Length: 213
Image 1 (tube, rainbow, N blue to C red):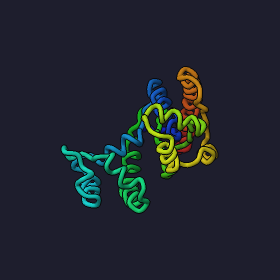
Image 2: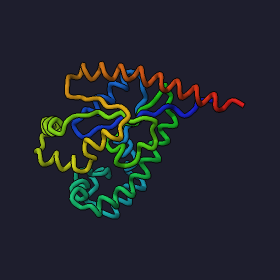
Image 3: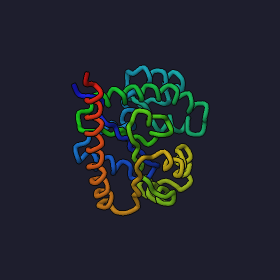
């Protein structure tokens, strides 16, 4: 019987290149549980969570097809800590439950939980190691402004909802500085992949030995 897989938590601030790193691991055959995707899955039309959100905030947060209008919801909760806390109290347990379910079904040698708020929401308790994709604050702002056509103040407001760079670094087991080219990131991810394969094999072997009578 297959034991619990080795789970790597992958995180990074906005504009760090977390999505690019996640895609590189996926291309190497590593199964990925994407917390952003899960957060969308738990509020699909017909879900209890979406019904409660609509009851609380009103019909203006729904699209014409009944799906969640994320921009409208974001505009309500972004500057209102009470409403944001209400929403997080509803969604975070549901997101965590679905993440755990998907992790249990992982079939690759190890799997990745990719989450921008891995540390902030306590999802790191679900993983065996944390990999931080790291860049300076100036790079975060420049990349996000170019990618999303937003102002520096808008990027800084998003950054304020995430842990500061130094705090993320203190809680990471592995750090990849991603201020170079995509090829450089790919080389670093490929090397780490071999390390994580070895760690996963060691964890599996230890688990099997502990189960022996």
